[in-house]
Amino acid sequence: VPTAKYIITKALTKDPKDYPDAKNQPHVQVALRLMARGKPVRPGQEIEYVICEVAGEGAKSSLAEKARHPHELTLDPTLKLDIAWYKKQQVHPLVSRLLAVVEDTSPARIAECLGMDAARFHQAALAREAVGGAGDLPSYAEAAGADISAIFDRKARWKEFQSTLPGVKCLKCGELSSWKQLLTPEQLSQAEA
Image (cartoon, rainbow, N blue to C red; front, top):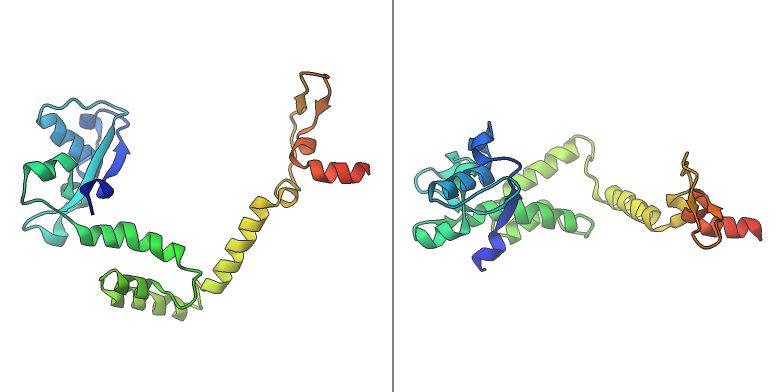
């Protein structure tokens, strides 16, 4: 997989030197290293970084210490992407949420397919069940389905809408249309019939 696929981007909200917790923020650490190499960095700039394995530090390293600008990978051949971190923090959570409603899938099974330690996820699932079925996937799927149906059903979505604003005046005829009329035209046309 090309390095470009692993790039994370985050904007600076202020000068990197003005961050009080700079040592804990990956994009700020990368920006400070860019500045040390003479590259101009300014507030609002998008900072690209990748997460790398740090030699000798292992799991002790903070995320900010493991963050590097993609160009640093070409400058230092000993740097390697931390594929395990990407699987654990970026891929697994997303895939688990997407497949949560698919029968016979579980976070543990997905972890196993990604080559991760499935035992940790299996233990978490057992703990959820012991607490009374929290995280029950069928009920989650039903609730999510109901929410999605409500979003796409204009009648349900705007049913309780109240506004103190007068509405919108037609530029052509000058007629004032209320927000309720604009948001639920089907209900009003049925009431008029």
